Structure formats: C-alpha cells, structure tokens
Image (cartoon, rainbow, N blue to C red; front, top):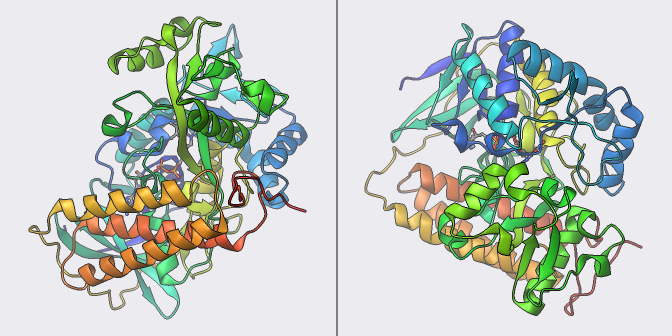
Length: 502
Ligand SMILES: Cc1cc2nc3c(=O)[nH]c(=O)nc-3n(C[C@H](O)[C@H](O)[C@H](O)COP(=O)(O)OP(=O)(O)OC[C@H]3O[C@@H](n4cnc5c(N)ncnc54)[C@H](O)[C@@H]3O)c2cc1C
C-alpha cells in the first residue's frame, strides 16, 4: 500500500459510508473508501433485519413517532430532514440505482410495522433487509469510476494540522501509510465490542468515535446505549456469539416467559411484549435475575414459516424453538456519537461523520426501530455531497510505529475481556453513580496501559482495543454526568429503583 492523496476519504463500508461515497462521487470527487471489512458481513448494516422506515406520505405521523421514541429529546430539525428526505433517498438509491426488490403485497409494497410505529411503514426484503441493500451497494461502488474501495484496510488515527483534518493513517497487512484527503468522512459504526453480549459484528469497536474524540472533536449523548431485549442466549452464545430475535417475532404474537413459565410483560407495561425496547430489556434482565432464565414462546405463531432463517439458526445452535428460545438483552445500538450538523459536519474543519458513529440528533434518548439504515442513507448522502469539493493537502502525518507482528493477539483479547466485564457490570442496562465511578477508574487504568503499549509497538487489534476503551470511557463519563433516567439511559439508586427525571 502506498501513500495517497484523495479528494474524499470515507472510512467504513456500512450503509452510511456507502451513501457518503456515492454522493461524493456523484458530486465529482475522487473517493477513497477505506474499510477494515473484508466481506459485507463485517458491517452491522448487513445484519439489519426489519427494514427501512419511510414516511408513506404522512411525514407528520412519522416525525411524531420518532420524537416520542426519543423520549422527547430528538432534535426537531434533524428529524425534519430525515423524514422529508426519506422517501426520495430510498427511491433514488435503493430502488433506482441498486434495483433492490422490496417485498410486495400484490402490486403495493408490503409495509411492515414494528413497536412504537403508529402505522405500517417499513420496507423490507424477507427479514434480512440489510444484506439485500448492502451487497448490491458495495458492488455498485466497486464498479464506480470515481471510487476506489480498499478492503481489509483500517484507519488508525486522523491526520490533523492546526485544527483541520487532512485524512487518516491507514493500515493493511501491518503496513502503515498516510492517506491525505480534502475531507474525511467517518462511518465506522457502533460500539458493540464494548459489551460481552451484542448484536453487532466484532468490527464494531468504536474506532471512529475514539479517533475523533482524541483529535478534539465534540462527542455527545454517549450515555444513550440501546439494548435489544431479545438476543439469543442459548448455552453456546458466549462462545459463538449471539443473534437477534427481532421485534417482528413479538409483533407476530410471541410471548416472553420467565424461568417459572409465567408470562410477565403485562405486569411491567400496558403494551406488554410490545412495550418500548428499554422497558422490555429491563424487564427481561430482572426476570432472568429473579427466575434464572427468560424464553421467547413462539407457539402462538407459525415461527418456522414466517422466520425460516431464525428457525434454522436456532436449530444450528441445538435449540428447538417449539420448546421456547432462551433470550437475554444485548447491546444493540448507540444513539450518540460524534456531534454533527444536518450535513454531517463535525466540530473539526473538514471532518464529517455519518451513521451510527455520528450523533445527528434524530434518536435523542432512544431510537425508533428501523430508522438507522434510513439515517445512514439520508445523512450519508448529505455529508458526501457537502464533503466533496476539497483538495488534499499534505501535512506532517503522525508518527505511528510500524505494526509489530510479534505482538501477541492475546494481549488485546485479554484486555477486551476485562473491558467488557466492566461495561456489563457497571455501565449496562441499569447504572448507579457509584458503579459508573468504578467503571471509569478501571477504564482509565486500561487506557494508560494501552497508551504505554502504543508508544513502543502497534497492531490493528491494539488500536481496536483503544477505540473500544475510549468509547467506553465516553459512555461512562456521559452517563455519570446525566442524572436523569431518560430513554435507554437508566440511572438506578443502589437498591435498583429508578431515579426519574423531575
Ligand atoms: C442484528 C441487527 C439488526 C438490525 N436491524 C435494523 C433494521 O431492521 N433497520 C434499521 O434501520 N437498523 C437496524 N439495525 C441497526 C443498523 O443496522 C445499524 O445502526 C446501521 O446499519 C449502522 O450503519 P453504519 O454504516 O453506521 O455502520 P456499519 O454498518 O457497522 O459499518 C461500519 C463500517 O466501518 C468499518 N470500520 C470500523 N472501524 C473502522 C476503521 N478503524 N477503519 C476502517 N473501517 C472501519 C466496519 O468494518 C464497517 O464496514 C440493526 C442492527 C443489528 C445489529
């Protein structure tokens, strides 16, 4: 790999990075899309199940649903942009450019409905929409004259000079080179790797958020980490990872039962299994602690017929869904991130951020289901266009040590175990001020160890560990500073009682 200059550097190849690259190229920029993914499965976008919400000609109802889900904390201007541009962006990119065949019911789209949506408005392809939009998107960009896709290539640090971002240091096969860029768009996704149980792929290590924060960019709303209530929790989930049993399964009638076989959600919320995600996640956690396990009872529906992929995945893991599927909450989505305006502009000159690593303001304290593919698409397009038109300028690049092939992978792996244990225990679904202080203390010491290591040797896994550690610190700091329980940030006192706003 050689030093390079590019008009626009996009880091990350999920939906948001692809949208930014497409818009940049359409605006006439030469785009370098650097991604540590070596296959589409390495991006969270690939795993999206439910689909993409659109306004269906009733933008006001869509806006109200987003704002209600956000616990009133969404930024109305950002929501307005998202909703007013949703239908056109989906038609332009997914339908006209990528030829995605969304499911139909007769001649009309088969709109799905998920919890907290006041109407059916979700376009989908089977229950695996992500792969059906991301794979063609990547193919389209690979064939684009103005886009060069660098796979298995990680950005480790931003190149900055006098408050302006000039690109990033890229690593592939242990080799490190600067990529100088007129503008840089971070699209590195979420922070699932900070928690033991997450629905995200292992690549979600918070790198972009950490790089931006360490360069001095503003980062906001990091306390709002959304946990999905129903991730697979069979015996091998700890070794083989978990997978999501989407809300659509409960939408079709599945019930949650505790270890004593009792249905418990009606005791927690009037909407029972379809209560807001954070309410269901806390209830599942409590019932697991109280009765040993929680299972998803799929007997009220034709599970195998309606969710064949999930049926097959359960069987692969030795679980017969007819006997109930063991579930537990898992980290799912980060509502906060790098603070940006409605064109994806961060607080540092020539730096942009899009998708899950960005805080656009549309999610406030909680995210409405099936709005993040849309957010990545709409704000990715806006940012790509706004970031085109700058020329690369060479400045002094940071001196990073060459990768050390002898640095044992186990170093980062062992530290990751410690980091995840701390985040699960002290900064998970429920937090107390005391626990957050404890977590911050451990994480600060870990950051010190990582810094000491990066002064003498380096590797991609070490930088991923740094990304996760800095992101985790930002979560604990934001959570400790926010004493109000809102949306998916839940502060409890030492006995576990909620400390509510007002
Ligand atoms: C199981 C599951 C189901 C979901 N279902 C839905 C749904 O139905 N509808 C919906 O709207 N949302 C859904 N979501 C959420 C949604 O999928 C994500 O929020 C969204 O896809 C994030 O897109 P992104 O482009 O920001 O990040 P990602 O898709 O995660 O892409 C990030 C990219 O950055 C790369 N990267 C990371 N760090 C670096 C680095 N240092 N250098 C280079 N590259 C890097 C990664 O390899 C990856 O390519 C779901 C999420 C999960 C986990």
